[in-house]
Length: 80
Image (cartoon, rainbow, N blue to C red):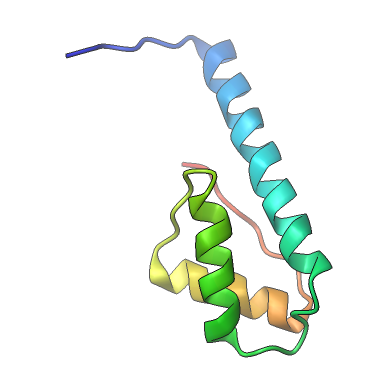
């Protein structure tokens, strides 16, 4: 078993790295012609893209995110 300890700087750096990756995935998804597309189709693409960087969203949040892409609205990710 391994134990990992991080100070606040380590946590902050990790959060910044993850946030940067999520921002890149979001920009890539929004650059595609997905505006007005069915939410279920966008959910599949979003889940795959986020999964590639190790991020999973609960189905409810994934649906909200896909809807925001379809509608062209902003979405706020919360790293907790």
